[in-house]
Length: 473
Image (tube, rainbow, N blue to C red; front, side, top):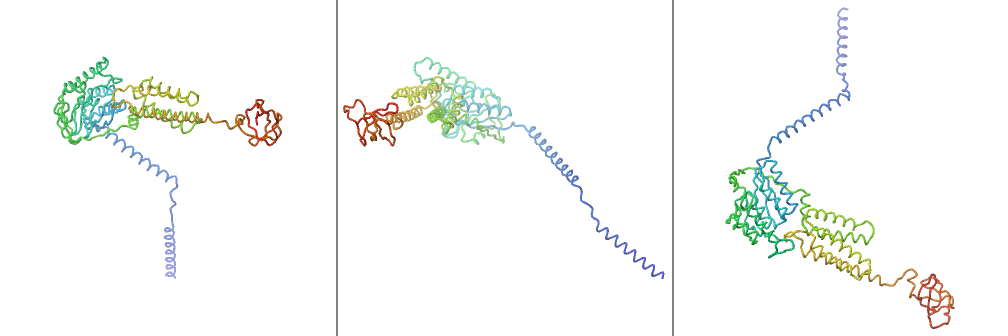
């Protein structure tokens, strides 16, 4: 009995142990509440944001501690020297000065430009604390007129094969030459300015004066031989190789080997203003804008003419702000357009159009105060534009006159000359049918025949008196 009791107890203990073990395997801990998961995610986000901010601070500190100096700034000037290109050049020089750059190089290719813009550029070159290198390149480029002064004012002047420099003689307003006193004053002033630049930079003073007074122009090799420029380089790499260890006139030695090149390009605004600094483009925009608005005036309502004409005039006004203009010339252009438009609506037999064309021609020639023919308004442009406008005006006026000469075909006046059929005897008053309508009619008393006009006879309408037609057989 004792053994059976012990065995049953042992069996019961095993069952309890088995049930306990099964209960342990079935235990499942509940998932963490959503609030705890969101808190963990927020902590991760904050940690990532903090690391990102730390990285940005480190990068900014490293960038600020790394000087922008010990670099070479370079850019290109290809075109006329005008207020837009002048602003671009001065911006680059100021930017390089603020960054304490090692040197500024700009490729020059210009046919000339305005004296005021050239003086501002030369002044910035002569007062720049960093060396400025002017490189007339590539082959086929020129440093004419204003380019002579900009090249001579550089700390280092270089030219590539196939380029030329010179022809700096100023052109007085109106093209006056010879014994004109004002022309002599202008030439003497520009010549003295060229000599002072050459003296300050240690270049050929005699040739600088000849370039102004005699319009002398020389090649790159001749310029190097005469001491007008300092270096003769085939390309930018050759120029940089020759600049290494080059001693400037003030004793500074250039050390440019291995320095990074940072190219500066004009902004979209500077590019737009540079295009609008061309008087030929501004003139065409101005005339087309006026024509488009004139068309809109002839076809009332806001439409294509107003949109296109308004846009062109706005662009033209941008250019007029940049270029030196004559207010009298602009007023004459407006007067010419007004006279031509008035001639379309008034019976003057073309007299106003002739006056308008004359005003347009005088206004076009006097619009810009730009004596340099390299950037002045082209005569061919003026003749072509005014001629086209004249032809269009003559065509429109001719069509208007032809329409005015046509007989009236509508309303009471359009009845004159028409032929009708009598529907009620005219003795002297009756009814006729004309153009599908019945009208009261009366025999014209000037008709030599005093006989009545019978039904179904044909009559011609002589005039209209109120609601009655005066007819004759």
